[in-house]
Image (tube, rainbow, N blue to C red; front, side, top):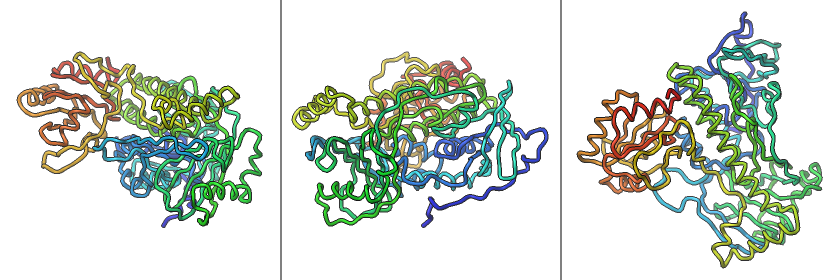
Length: 545
């Protein structure tokens, strides 16, 4: 088994380092973390060559981001590495909330059947990065350069020129577009004189990876004010390789250096295990860290030819698993738009919609994250009394459960107000509004075999879902073909049990058509489209309208 935390990648001198004038590339991505790697792979699959620079030559250490949501897994499926992550990770959907030592309620994040992917998997970040690096290495259009640190940037009308520091000295690199995916301490953000603004929380948390053989169910456990850690909160998750992740709230006055020492972590973990009936279970401490956090973002995610994604653009608290998942969704949103612009299929203005859509999503994530943090870590006696009263009512009263917030877990933002959406001309019910990420469902392929709806969608094109059979469905299919638009058409038959579930989720009738962007967000829908409305909707989604 590969130890991804110990891998070291070789620096290699590149011909670009001797080029004069600087070599020019369509897209340069800065930062080979989960977001930068996702973006690079997505662009390469769209036939866009990418240079990916990283200032280090290692993957992340410790578990760090571990909860990867259903939507991220669907993105990884499209990139060709989702199966591997799900197979290695620990799938879960059930969470339990405890007040003192009593369970007050449980929830299921994916209570309905008919989804290929689980609500979440828990998988250490170094595995996610490692699998993405290996996928990138298999794609010849990705030029991944380790130990290449960006130390300067000069913006021009037609692109940007980067100064890159290497073990062999500095060189310059020109790019039509630069994607800044270089993390919360983004060097590019600083070089452009930008900053992320928001709220910093005065609290400290200890994260510890512990290895143990405890027959606990695979679920998220969150304690408020337990007897084994009074006055604070604790979160417990299972990971791959028999490893468990535990987060202890410490309070602002805790000493980060002292709290990270094994002799101080051990009694905390021992008290937790004793309280849940595993006094005899032995454990080993792996990686540990003490962190503080902030909910903040840049004012704008686009600055000329530089586009910010992931932690370089926005940051949230860890409650709700919104950090890495929102970063993957940034990359998912940006890749198809960059490809369309670079390949001349859309105007540069399409990239403005990346900024506006993902700024909206960041605001939503920050709002949820801030509310969770305020509930978990009340900053006044009145706030604590309110929280504890809510928790005490939760076991017997359903209304109180809606007020409990141990972290509203990550779901994709619904981009209702996106300028790329075509407004409904017909009446629809349900969640699949323009701007929503398409819901998965079982389906039957043309050859009669079973499949999944999102797997049938084309990763590099707009996809049209045509629902039902009979005259109305055939008429819609013919109209789509007559529109002469570059479309991938998927027929969803409502006569099978599988097709019936998709039909319900999309509130479809025979002949209903949904138009999906290449990132699988709905951008238009009709009961009976015309060739003109289809062409107009695609133009609008490409910012041509």
